[in-house]
Amino acid sequence: MTTTSPTKTAPDLAPAPLPASAGKSGGRFKLGAGQHLNGGPFTYAALVVVGLGSIFPLYWTLVAASHDQQRVLDSPPPFLPGGRLWSNLQAAWEQAHLGKAIVNSFIVAGCITAATLFFCTLAGYAFAKMRFRGRGALMTAVIATLTIPPQLSVVPLFILMSDIGWGGKLESVIFPTLVGAFGVFFMRQYLLEALPYELIEAAKVDGATNIRIVWNVVLPAARPAMMVLGMLTFVQAWNDFFWPFLALNQENPTLQVALGQLSASYTPDQSIVMAGALISTLPLLLVFVVFGKQIVGGIMAGAVKG
Amino acid sequence: MATTTPVRGAHTPPPGGSGAASNGPSAWRTRLWRFDDKASPYAYIAPFFLIFGAFGLYPLLYTGWIALHRVEMTGLDQSEWVGWDNFAKILQDSEFWTAVSNTFVIGVISTVPQLLVALGLAHLLNYKLRASTVWRTVILTPYATSVATAALVFALVFRADGGLLNWVLHFVGFGDTDWGDGEWTSKIAISVIVIWRWTGYNALIYLAAMQAVPTDLYEAASIDGATRWQQFRKVTIPSLRPTILFTIVISTIGSMQLFGEPLLLQGGTIGAVGGSEHQYETLSIYLFNYGWKLGHLGPAAAVAWAMLVLLLLIALINWIVGRFVRKSAA
Image 1 (tube, each protein chain N blue to C red):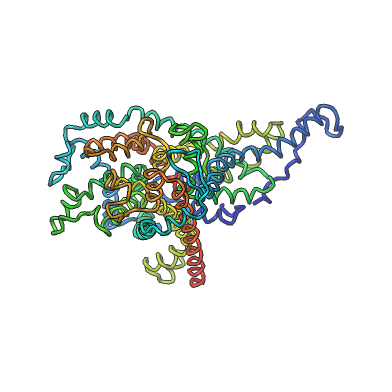
Image 2: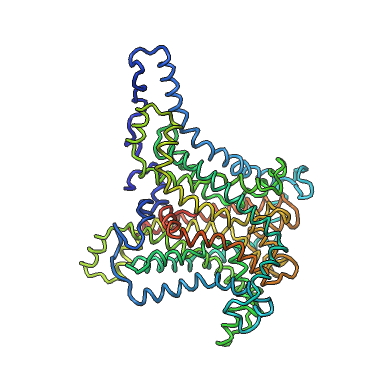
């Protein structure tokens, strides 16, 4: 199934089964499920502990956001939500320009997601199904860019952005992440399996140009993977902190930047900071509750940190 | 892989076009098709390379130029050649070496437990479970939490006076740890944030790899009388070796970049220098402080190059260790 891979590095990066099957695997394991043993009470007990540990900090964000600061720092600390949630949310909203920040976050994450889906599907299709000179080397180059941390280029990036007049503007955080190596790799892996050559050839015999083939054959076949990549990209773009924090300022922040600045203010009120944290996390948690299964499948299929 | 591709250019022009006679409109069309076939793949991959060239590669090289110049935040369009001064400045700064060692220490104490726990967790998730998707989704929720939110909640948990953790610890007689100010406690606090955010994610990657291990390997092992623990050690772990190496590389790169966690652990001006004694200042914080707080972009660019050198060193160590492990396994 994954025996045909053009680059040496690709198999290491793809320890995962078929994206399609992983996405649907749901409750029961199919091929190669390992030991096929039922989980015992110890397994469930351990999972409950880990699960509580995963959820508790988020729950406590809500608790802390619904009391006043004095109560939050009291001992014993509160463990149940209090009655000040609304006033804290309002205070956070006003102090940190959160209204503008929410709009900005949606613009940034939305643009990045749309562009990533379009460009990565095109490139993934080319790498998976088209023959051209230098394909193997170029794919290796794409994967190699994954290992370059953004820290290495933020200084000139900052100067570059102010040179072309994007200093402090949303363009400066949107454009550098329009298309990512992870997405290209992810779409390539999926299309290798999901798109039969016969379909492309049939379209060619019918006289379709390449761009028509992309539109009528590739995009429909790629749709399930695009859904998953779209959600992963949105999560990443929404949560991005380092470069947006350097590039944007207080007047025009994304949610994460606004949150960072709220807590960096002189004597931040912790309950209000937590209310801000709640606002910035809630949209993603909603996405997660609805599409958690697909996101889990996507990560297991892609198995690369973006 | 390339061998599976059908021969291209073999497709005939659309029905109706004359096959042999290669003049007239159909010849023109054939040529257009050839061009379409040759150029399209490059056109499809071009956006990636254009964006990477403009906002990845070009800045990377430009960093080298800035590192040799004096560039100030107050006048971005002015620069002055200073040679290796910026490098000398940071290499002689004891704070830089503190940041290097902090980055390394935090990297180790966050990566090692995280990957070990993830491995165990993946093993548990690999059993037949009720509601397996729910478990997987639950352990992945920290991944959906932004670094800013995670850092701020844990900042409250680790707070010296009135922090949740100290309240829990006072029952066993350790109620007054100043987590943020301690040399080790602050590093542990930051590692906990990292571990919390990434363990579930890595567990899912391991789980995917575990499910790809052929079942007959386990059957053969159990026929030979291997216990479950022996099966885990002798079958699962060796099959997962490439995945484990991969997660080590990715986590190492990730730990080189730690920024939001140290910045927000204590917040404000203390966070911007990585603690009152720089006890949890990472290289990213050091770069940020030099470039954005003090406004000297030349030394900040030099720090970026130092990070690149460190990354290459780590890659080299990884490669050597990987070879060693493979040899000793053979």
